[in-house]
Length: 399
Image 1 (cartoon, helix red, strand yellow):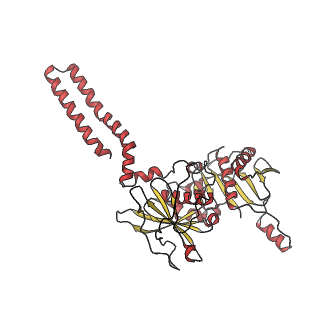
Image 2: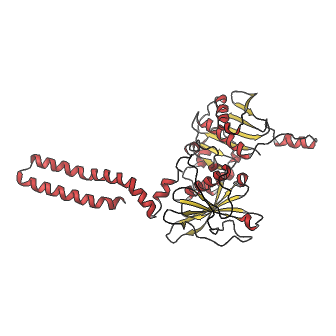
Image 3: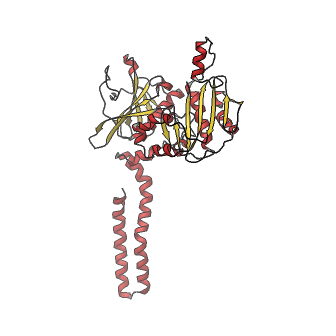
């Protein structure tokens, strides 16, 4: 299986130092004991890095990428609801750098393979695991971003577009779990508080955990939900989560994820359902529990919440998930509110109070300097009233 990424530029793509790309890739794969070597084949715009099990080919082109590879991804709902206009970036790009990771030490087009099969030739190409090839593709793409800033990145394996800034945030990850699945959204409407409930099927996730992952409907928001699923997938690949039916995986201080695995119930098309649960004030669901999935049920069916088996702590080698601030500022739970009051509101109160009092303090000082004595007492009295009123009103306005 071949994995690809296209880095798009609205101007001319500059040449890159392929030796630096190779060094970055080998450094990223060093813990696997895997190293690629530069092939003698290549020139100033093309390079090939080889390993007995897989290869990486990189092509710098001063022409736009083939338009047909974008059509399905641009039409996907997940692309159309993003705040960044990826359709405009695709239409405006003038050059690109293509990165391909495939099986065997050298690329072999499908038509050549088909011809060899007709001739009875035996294929002896070895294959690397999908996770290794994704890691290699990730490191090579990051190396390119380190030399020049593109307008967008198209990760063809999952059919997902990413901005340079979003992609750069994955640099600290050993395996870029947030890049490898494509959320297909579903929603049954709003909850009792009027918040939109969103769930999604994570297409392509079966390549890395054997079953398709499904995020049940919740009110966290799409960014938060995708971060949670990416975290669960990372735990599965790291061997710290088995994704067994009834398993509970800790995401952070506020959320744990309850697992329901259809394979336990003999479903031939089994999926793994993830239900986020708030635990800061004693567990309660962020989604409505549903009955066990029946045969023939819709893809968007919600899972029931199964009893807790064991809580697993999230690894602390990663930075705070980017969803965290969005989650705290969009939730009305008392716990999240208290966290905000301890930090954000304290500073806002101090700044607002200073801005509120400064004009009156200045005027009062002028009054004390230039007004007759009989007016000075009135000025001080008014300043005191304004200060007390501001200290009483501002906290309510801020919180």
